[in-house]
Image (tube, rainbow, N blue to C red; front, side):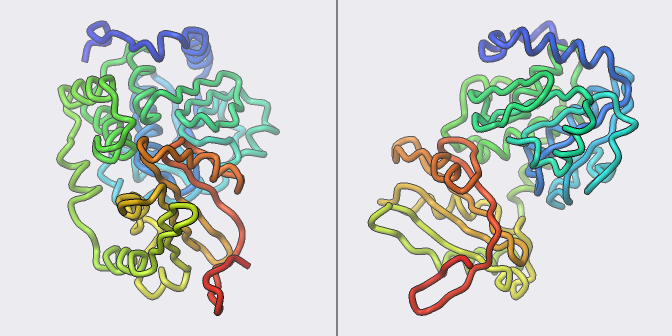
Length: 331
């Protein structure tokens, strides 16, 4: 794709200072670390791998990182097997790029990054971002961080290849629910079309994300649906999954992908809420709503120290799910 053939959309045209700051830091850096949030989804992984491909084209030495393992269904993306996990030394890097992370602590390297004093570029589309960084580009109007990364790559004058295009489209497909969510804009469709023109493999993306459900995924989804309850006072469709459920079904938290959206389809509810004990003593809450339901679920997530978007948010807390005569509760 010829970068000169694409008009930079208005939502990035107003971020000229940030774009120039990103260009300046990239020009000065040679050894770069790209990181994202824990349990990374397709937008997070797509963002780091697309940037990897672009920066290598610029002659940079690049290391990609996620705090823990990425979902295995994303292994079709080139560079997936090279992603490092857990803690690592920052000594060799002269620039750190954090993407789609909401807050620097979610990278698992928050304290190390702050203590290092190294320049940080933060790129995100979550309006609840902590905005930590030397240069911070947060674009809440973007449907996915990959949508922002695509425009940054164009601004850098780098041609997309099929591998970069597939990584970017993967993130856009994931964060728009295969172009079904309300965050789909004309620009989303425009940039997605351009990515496909450059060889983005939509078939591989759809097959990996939605083409098949394992037996363990079907079992854990069934358990979540079996437990769903509608709260008449709050209008919430609520379900819970314990760590024991995951073990009994032979499932992982990745097998619950899309379940909270399924709960959100129940008529006469205002939002959906799935609470999952993904590890012993660790809980993850996922919330979804729709524009016509007029519920800002980010405000709910914020009460538990989380955040996200008005229609899609989440949080994490320490605790264990137990059931007694009054129902489920956190201890």
